[in-house]
Length: 309
Length: 327
Image (cartoon, rainbow over all chains, first blue to last red; front, side):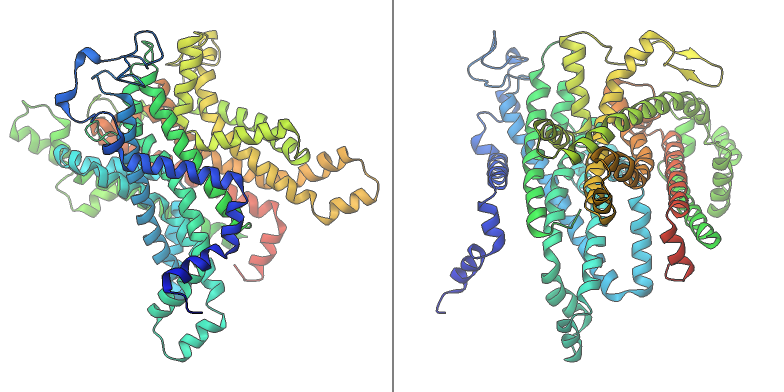
C-alpha cells in the first residue's frame, strides 16, 4: 500500500475492465492508434509539413496544379501535388487537419460544459428550471443539428461587419457547432442524475449539510461521466464533419485559415478540369479522421454502456 | 387525447412564434432595411418615405405583429439582391427541392429496409458484413464528399450522368417537374443517391436493431414453439412489429432530408430552396433567409405534430398512461 499517487493512478487504470477490453479489441486499438497518429500529425503540422502553405514567399505559381509525384508530370518535391496557388497539398492537408481538429475539440468541449452543466442543474433541481431547460432541448432536438449550426453561423455572420467576421470566423463556427450539440449531453446527464440523486451517498451528503453545488459537482458528476465520454467521442467526429460541411458550403472558415472543408471547396472548382488531387486528398484525410474517431467511439460505447444508443 | 393535442398545438405555435421573432429580428436589426432595398442614388426624402411605407417608425411590437401577419400570408417582401418577391422565388424553387427529397426518401426506404432485415436475420454472412461496412462508411462520409465522389466517378471519369442542374423541366402551370423528361430523370440520379445514402444507412441500422430486438421476444419464441415457419415468423410477425418505429423515424427524417438537401443542392447546383438559402447567406439577402427559416420551421413543426399524434393513435399504451395522469 506504499505506492505513490501517480503509480496508484496507473495501477488503477491498468487494472480496470476498460483497459482489458481495449487491449483485447483489435478495432479499438487500431482506431485509437490511427486517431492518435492523425491528431499528433495535425498538431505538429508546422514541424512535420515539408512546406508552410501560408508563407506566400515560398509559393511559386510555376508550381501550380502539379499532379502527385507518381503521376506523369509530378514533381518529387510535392508528394501529393500542388493546388492552383502552387501550395503543397500534403502540407495544406496537415495544416488543414490541425484547424479541423481544433474546431472539433473546442466545440465539443464547449458543448460538453454547457450540456453537462444544464443537465446537472435540470436533473438535480427539477421543477420549473428542469421544465424550461428540457422544453428548449425538445424544441432544438426537433431540428437537425447541422441545420442549427448553419443557421447560427449564417445569422452571426450577417450581424457582424465583414472584416470583423474574417477575424472571428474560427470562434463563430466553434460557437455555432457547440450550440447545435449541447442537448444530447444535457438529456443524458439529466437522466443519470435523476437515477443517482435518490441513492444513499447523495442523501448522506444532504444530511451532513453539503450545498447543492458541492453535491452536484463533487459527488454526482464523477459517477455519471462514463456516458458523457462516449457522447463526446462520437460528437467529435460529428463536429469535425459539420465544420467541414459548413466550410464547404462557404459559410465556415475563410481561405485565409483553411480547414479541410475549405480545401475541399477550393479543390472542387478544379474537379472538372481533371485536377482531382486538390479535392480528394483533403477529403480522404477528413474521412480517415471521422472513421477512426467513430470506430473508437463505437467501441467505447459498447465497453462502457451497451444500452446507450 | 384532446388535451394532449391542444398541448402539442400550443407548443408548436410557441415554436413558430419564436422562429418568426428571430426572422423578424434578422430583418429589422441587421443593417438598415431601407439601405438594403434602394440604390445609391435614392434621395433622403425618398428614403424617409420608404421608411414610412414600410412602417419602420412604428413601435417594435406593432412591426412584429405586421411581420407575423404578412408571414402567415406567405409575404416576406422583396429579395435584396434579385429585387423580386421572395414568395414567388420560393414557390418557383419548391418543386425542385420536394422532388429531390421524395425520390431520395423512396430510395432510402426501398434499399434500407431490405438491407436491415437481411442483416438482422443473417448476422454472420459475408453480405451482411458488407452491408454493415457500407453503413459505417455512410455515417463517416460527409454528404458533400459523397456527392463529390459521385461527380468524379460518373460525371468526370465515366461521363455517364450530368453533374449539375435539373435538366429539362416540364411546366405544369403550378408545378415544374423534371421527372417527365429523359434529361431531367438523368439529372436527378446522382443528387438523389447523395441525399439518400445517409438516410439509407440510418434506416438500415434502425430496422436491424429493432428486428433483432423483436426476434428475441417471447411471442416469437412462442410462435416457433407452435411450429410456424421461419419465413412466416420473420416477415409476418417480426417485421410487422418492427415497422412502427421505422415509420415514425422515417417521418421525422423527412425534415432532415430537406435540411440535408441544402448540402446536396450546393454540390450539384440543383436549383432548389436550399441553394437559394445558401446564396442568400453569402449575399446577406435577409428576406430570403427569413422566409426560408420560417418555412423550414413550419415544415418541421407540422411533421413533428403529425408524427406525435399518429404515435398516440397507433400505440394504445401511450393513451392509457396519459389518461391516468402520469403525462
